[in-house]
Every structure is written in structure tokens, then in C-alpha cells.
Image (cartoon, rainbow, N blue to C red; front, side):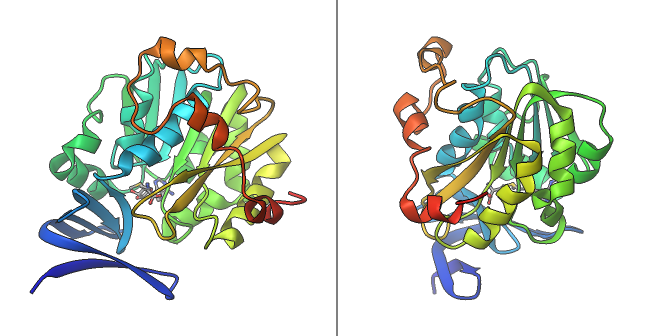
Length: 280
Ligand code: SAM
């Protein structure tokens, strides 16, 4: 009988993928971690039964979280990633040769070690000498660090368990303190269809610290609803007007989803999405 892995979203809809083989299954202090080989979506990582990535479409999420801010900030040298234990975000950031250091703070060592072993196509940059990998709570890290960053990327799970404070005002206050004056915060902003109740409070909690707040969209084949979003917050930079498209070609960076037209159009929001953000 065929094996399937099924994500149940908010108890009301399900997404299933046909599985050929379970590669890893473990329970960490934070979550259940599963890595399976699917029939049509490559290797897939699930945390607590929720799809984190598949080899089939992970390039979309990881290119969009990394290249959008790194091609808007005029000179990004120091980048902080909170979460992101699979390594996909770091892989894309390190394509930018001007980035001197990336600090990645992932709470769960099991995610990192399992992805290193079973998903090398995604975790391949985790041993790069420009990366400092810390296994600790990202909330504690931003509260205590004295370091400054040009871009902070929150590559987190949904606001459940240890990721809950990553959506709170106190966390954004700390992020604003450690960002350089041109700094940019990117945050995983969930599904525009299903998670409007998360997206709006997330931006409300960022509002006291950032003059510019934007949502941008991308398609994600293996997430519920197929459409997903990131938040772009900064003290002054506009992600469209301050974007210099010529830098993309000059960088020589190879991408499969991201390009200058996608960059600009990602910030064009359907009415139902922008209406939910009215007054934020
Ligand atoms: N692309 C994914 C998505 O949106 O489904 C996110 C992938 S990444 C695997 C998310 C990571 O965030 C998880 O490995 C989880 O352990 C980590 N995480 C959750 N809360 C955290 C916290 N407070 N500090 C650091 N990492 C955290």
C-alpha cells in the first residue's frame, strides 16, 4: 500500500504527498522532525507534520527571502538569520560576495544535523567559513547581542511553540536595536489566504519601530494555498524605489525564480491582501 505524508492545516484542509521512503524521523525537545523522499517533490522536511520545504520548490522561498532585501540594501555586509536550520536561506545569502558574515541562530540542533545528512542540496552552505552557526533561541540572541546587522531574516516556523515570540512586539524592538540605520527586517508572513489573522498583528507589532512596512508575495507549491508572503520592514528604504535592478545582472548570481521583474511585481498586492493591512 502506498505511503502518504499529510499536513493538516488549521484542522480544515489537508495536503498529501506520496512517500517513497522515510529517511529520518526524530523527536527533539522542540518538535518532531521528519525527512522523507517523496515520489514527485524530491526530499521533504516536515516539522511537527508541517511542510518546511521540498526539493521541488524550495528555491522559490529561499531566493525570495534572501535576494529581495540583499538587492535593496545598498551595501549588505552582515546578515542575521533566525531559524532557517535547513540552510537554504544561508545558501542564497552566501551567493552575495559582498556579505562578509552571516550569523544563523537556530534553536533546534536536530533540524540542522538531519538536513546536513539527508538534504545536502539545501544544507550545502552550512560549513561555509563566512557562516557563524549558533544553536540557541533567536529571541534570547537578539535580546543580548551587541552586534549590528544590515539585514535580519526571520526564517521561522508558524507562530506555535518556540516561534511564537518571533511574532511579538518585544522581539521586533530588539531587532530594530541591532539593525544598522539602513537595516531591513524580513519576516515569514504566512499565507495571505489563510493567515490574515497572523499577518495583520505581525505588522502592527513591527509598526512602532519601522517607518516602512510592506508585504510581498511568491508562489509556494507545497504550502497550503500555494501563495505565501514575507514582510519587508525598514526605517527608510523602499523595496521598489531603492531597488537597483542593474545590481542583479552585475552580481552574476544564478537564480531560478528571482529576477528584477519578479522583485518589483512581488510588492503588487491583490485588494484582499492590502485591505487586510489598512491602517497598520
Ligand atoms: N521555510 C520554512 C517554513 O516557513 O515553513 C521555515 C523553515 S526553518 C526549518 C524554521 C526553523 O525555525 C525551524 O527549524 C525551527 O526550529 C526554527 N525556530 C523556531 N523558533 C525558533 C526560535 N525561537 N529561535 C531560533 N529558531 C527557531
